[in-house]
Image 1: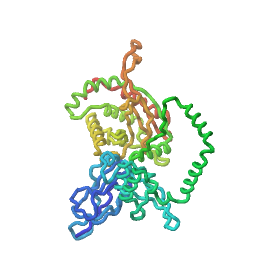
Image 2 (image 1 turned 135 degrees about the vertical axis):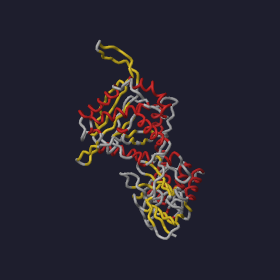
Image 3 (image 1 turned 180 degrees about the horizontal axis):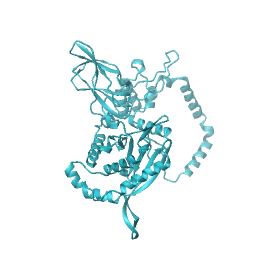
Image 4 (image 1 turned 45 degrees about the horizontal axis):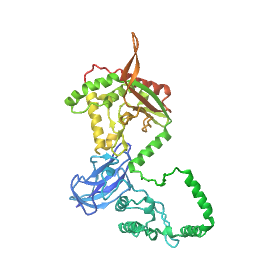
Length: 470
């Protein structure tokens, strides 16, 4: 028999590590060829790692929530053969980073992601260890179903190895809480001297309550008089833990604002010809090509035409070096059903005709919403487009998708009365109008370039040929 090393595969040019989300197989389990061994997550997508050979899992090298570098050995599989081997496993179909959240299991609840707890203080005679506390997926799942917060988890004494909270520990705590006796189930630190001081203070206050009752009553009367009759304020609030993808989005947004000095320019375009052309051709286009004709490919076509005239827009910054990209890879911000956001990339958008753009865009959007994106689908974007009009907004001020230097947002298309200039004079007409906004990195793109590019995009949209063939 031979031992095969299952290695963390390469997931994209800029991805150097991935987090272990879930082991689908355990030590001793038999594994078929291409059967999923584990699930991993990067800052872009979640994906599965399949077995390249049939065999038996004999060793697991990383635990759930561990971060494994690309190329590291994830597990060892015993297979038929004589020599040990190292296998860089291919990656199966990937999902947006919320896939685990969208289909929670009893083993790995994504809605309560693993976060190292604060150091657990022990009694002086014990070790006094300040290591972070680990919670197993099973404990986290029970915590989710029973509404136990992380602050409560930290208070539960663990009887497992290294002081870990076991299934029995959390179930006992939940049972005690429901019976109103949670005061008897607290962590060692909760019974320390500082906590006793709090109890003593509370008792002292209670004892002296008769001496301050008149003042308290007056204060209560004043407070009640300040509220309208019949209004009851509960003071209640809800605390929601961020899921893993929301944490990543938050970090990316903060990093981008701290990296690039953002400037946003605005323009508007009369897209009447474009709207009417699409209305006249979308039914025949879908019947002939088998895919819908949306506004996105029309806008992307105009974006690429404008970007070719302003190559600085399609660049990135490396220190004091400006890197002009020759590929036109347009990222399109896509909202997921749970409210999170992902940006699949239309590769080589300048080389695709309208049919190719439509199919590429629709396929990527469908893959994002159905949890089927591959890691490469979100890599190597050079410019990003977001349609805030989808949600009814007229305009927005988007944040740059690093390491790009610009991002454009288009608003909702609205009918408005506009002045039409003709050789015979001005006239009033109802037109389809759309606002555009461009955020750009002021370190390398000045206002003249940013505004000129945005104006060119508007000109391209307004110049749409109403007589062109679909």
